[in-house]
Image 1: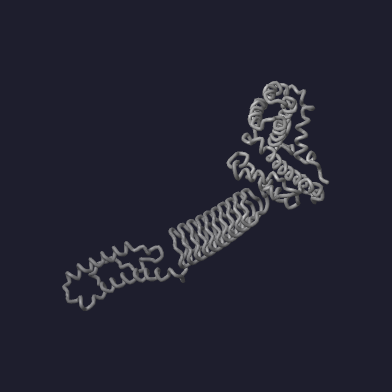
Image 2: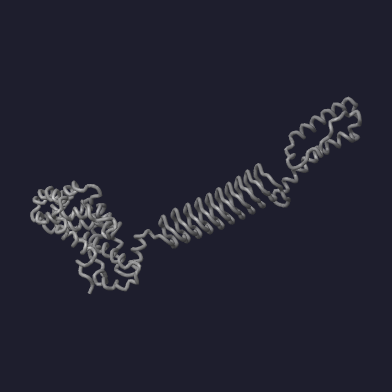
Length: 434
């Protein structure tokens, strides 16, 4: 047989509140609480006999529970349900429950206001108070027992199975109420967000694993599709979040990752190797086909794109300000290094190697640049027979005009960066020597 309700974590916490008056009842800090609370409790018959308990418990929960105490996180909920149980058990009129709880909390709040506990469910009526308390107890007990066995082989877990093995009926009652008249209330919102998922949980090793993952924020590995920010470890396909450390698999996304990015991954500031399809800024390492981003350092393979890269770019890559070798098809302004055939961009420094799709255009431009001056020189030098019938004065004018036209054409030619234009220029001398 498992522990009784009083020996479960919630029962022990309520027992502590019950007996703190024996420890703190004579403290000077507790006397002012008693004085201000006495008049309020006298308005509600039979509650005044709990004056010492309530005043001492308030001092305990406000001043004596450190943040290292196991009940610290849930202390205000535990106090609320403990106090509500006293008030509910000493009232004959259900309608006075909300007013009594509200006035007691208002009075208590005047003492130790820093970090004080609030009225956790100010709109929860006496009719549903007991159901909500039962739900909370189950939630709190499962969490606490699982934490108690954390890091062990769970061999002692069976001792609690009879006490925590069944799901309380209160879940069904609260679920029905919150789907109907209670919809939209603060306590129903809390029930649906925090407690309802425990209606499908009984004490087991698997349940404890789920609760542990929820409590720790799943720090470690993330499986496919699991959404949780701030994880540390390995990201599998489809995972999302920020500030991850480790490896990202296909489809993963997130800024500031460190390690290896596989196909489809995206995010700024990554360090390591980017595989095909990856995108992001500020990466360091190797970019494989299809990757894109700014400020990368390393080697860019086919299809990669981005600005400020350092290293090599393979066919199809594009990006401004890169440093290294660009292979066929690469494009981008401000690159430094060797451009292979077909590369395009501005202000490049280095050499061009023949043999890709852009060569025909370059050859055509070169032929035009060479052919026009050659034809002009041919007409000037040899005077075809059909022009010899004209007089010499006309020939002189034509020669001078031809020289001007040729020189103007030569001034406008922008091919001089790669071809020495002086190779085709004509010395400007008097024609009388010819």
